[in-house]
Length: 375
Ligand code: GLU
Image 1: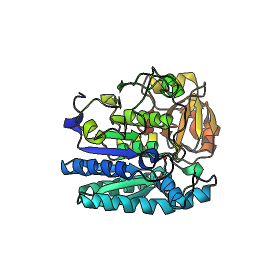
Image 2 (image 1 turned 90 degrees about the vertical axis):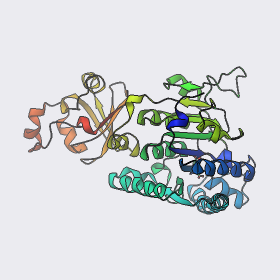
Image 3 (image 1 turned 180 degrees about the horizontal axis):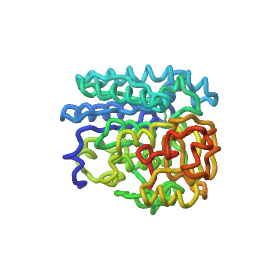
Image 4 (image 1 turned 60 degrees about the vertical axis):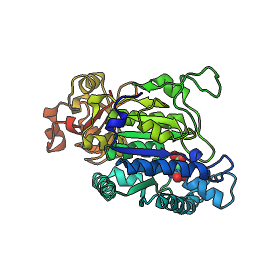
């Protein structure tokens, strides 16, 4: 039994992947969809707020058009998403309505979350939908976004959503039982990990496989989602959608699938959450080892003296990655100076900023309050 899950879960995000919704031949798995929706409606009846992140737009679109696999070009995929998303929502609307539930379609793009104001708008809308007792069904707005500006996969999107609404649990349902210590398709003695408190490089290495032919995920994107959840203080479970009453059972605290346990002290401030996960970084600042220690160990702000190199074009107020001398991303933060200004003051003392730039609005390149540190 997993203690606390049942008692604590008042708001849950459930993510359904394409492989859960469609058969390998591309046809809809109606029995399974009905079974899962019924459980979600039942949770809702118990007074639990439910948000559904559903993939499947492209897969369902491909199916409607009689395609055996997803076409390669972006416009074709986008067209299929437009065709499939409507069909998918129609199906959800119909099944949820049988149980008296009202649903709301929410299509998000990265741009909606990159901008702090739009992020807050999206958050408020989701909370308003929940307050109305309605179940939001969320997907990426695939029809209008191209590769470079995509979340890319709904595992990431569902973790972001879970963070945004301060969910008590993210449940990712998939066609696997959870995370194994090695690839179960290659190794028959692979062991299911029931509890994970830390994601290691080895786990990521073992997970570099692709998902089904219609989906974008795989275990790697789920681990990325788990990292985000653990940092944001949201427990996450990966479980198999095929298991009878899986959603109800996980929510009842039954030990099923893999539970990723957040560190309790990691409940993140909303703005830091946005800095860490809501945005696409616009540039990179490499810092020296002294700055790495100051940021990771001593809770300090980033000063110009620690900056070695600046990459990318960015304005004041954008979010950038902070990178160690070895090239590892250690933090993200909102910069007080533009890339152009930073190149001039890199390596310099705070007292020299004014002389170089003609003005000094800030001592710090990134203030601690605007910095999210990955440790
Ligand atoms: N947004 C895509 C779709 O609905 C799926 C992304 C994913 O597979 O994670 O088809």
